[in-house]
Amino acid sequence: MTWLKPVSIDANAQAAYSEFLRDLEARLADPRTDRNVLAREVLAQAMYGREYGQLLADAPLAALNLDARNVTFEAEYYMATDASRFAQVKPLLWLWKNLDLTPTGQNPVLGIPVRRLLAERIFKRVGRNFKCWQNVEFSVGYNMEVGDDVVVHRHVLLDDIGGIELQDGASVSDYVNIYSHTHSVLDGPDVTLRRTVIGRGARLTYHSTILAGSVVSDDAMLATHALLRGDIPPHGIAMGVPARVTRYKLRDPQEYSVDARTWPHEPGRKANPAFPDPTPSQTRKPTLEETGEG
Ligand SMILES: CC(C)(COP(=O)(O)OP(=O)(O)OC[C@H]1O[C@@H](n2cnc3c(N)ncnc32)[C@H](O)[C@@H]1OP(=O)(O)O)[C@@H](O)C(=O)NCCC(=O)NCCS
Image (cartoon, rainbow, N blue to C red; front, side, top):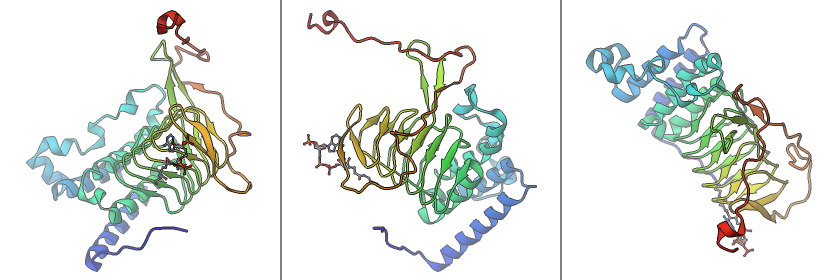
């Protein structure tokens, strides 16, 4: 069941958008397409209303920044990023990010289908009806695994460098942050990658944060503003900082795809060869003297 209703726009505008989408899809599917050229051309039209070559003559700085070969992403500075895989998706991520700054990206009837086309060529896997609203950020994009009918709302950060899986029907609300890497407390460059898994129909509600390696079971929920640093069992509702399961949905048990209680949690993968060993606990509780209670 859905609470959404159909919305339509002017037929001529819709026809123009559909033609744009068909053309973009065909160009993306053509193995001869240079993705860097495609991205800069689409952006020159969407942002400046002219061809890339003309823009280069008129406003070189603006034009040069539209070509992904002339820009860097934060992910490119990290050892864990696979340079050749990232090079494949980089122009498409650049197109996605910059279209979000334009009316094309801010307009859901056009922006959502464009992102669907791009996700099919950026993510490791994406299912049917992926609905991604505007201003969503990825780390590398190529480590995203997304099922059917997944929704990601506005201003979400998907740090997929260690892998993020969003199973069928999962919903990620506005301003959620999902991480898949962590740093040692004592040595910042000591990085561990942990895959983060969000089960079927699970809901991460607005402004919540999910730390690397967390497993959210099917039909579980993370309350608004919660900080998850572990798992949620099926139908559990985790709340607070750090999040604890303080409620369960009134549901009958069912077959689960992700059940954190039995999920084979993978050990963290070390991302920096200078720190090959598992990172031990590097903190202690304050003494009574330090808390002023001694
Ligand atoms: C978790 C949530 C669903 C409330 O569940 P609920 O069981 O119906 O909530 P209640 O209001 O009866 O509160 C139950 C308890 O949880 C606490 N609680 C509720 N929301 C909380 C939150 N976000 N953080 C911490 N505690 C919370 C209440 O204080 C109450 O505590 P008590 O038992 O000690 O009195 C809701 O607070 C929430 O986070 N909603 C998110 C909205 C949403 O669905 N967003 C998705 C949009 S796409």
